[in-house]
Length: 266
Image (cartoon, rainbow, N blue to C red):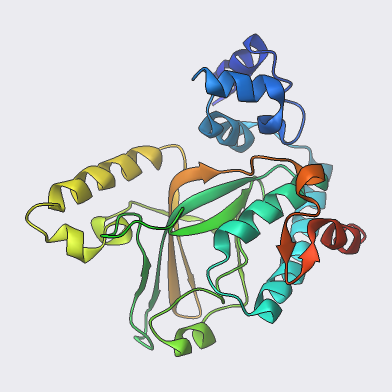
């Protein structure tokens, strides 16, 4: 791992990138290197996973993320607007960057199921007949803290009763990670799986996802007899920093600037 960390540092340095700065994926040097195909968002995310953090920072990040998650999850529920996972994730990325917390957004498939069959499995597939969304689901990963999913209550489920069995939000601690191997039912809609013309596309997609998961692991959480299978398929980061988005991005009519002012002292 230290060898890979040094490789990434050398790659950043050779492109004039200051990798010690939180949110350096937005710096001009990074964007230029990305445009040339020399750097990817996956490099940024991988670097965050394998770099080391001080004990003081870890304590700060854990405490702050917990308080912010509660605050924003309440805003999401109060707004009562469904399917905001990408927007909330991008907003939270900007907010955490501004608060000095390393993080990145993850696009992925999600399967939610009831182990005691209180509701039918809920699937957010990567590959569907329509493929008309930017991501089937999205969440935040904060190294040393875990997975942060703040929109779990406000997704489009097949039945309204599903939400009643779900938590307000998910914070999955790294110490609780249960690593899994993605299967076709996680990422490919059955319509494609069994279509004679398109089923090969599903098999190819599964292999692509499994390859991606070698670095960005798929995990399962079981809580109160509900299983959540989080399958990363890509990295998602805002294309502008906090200053530019402080007024543009909103959650429940509150701008990022207002949210920042309210959470910075929590």
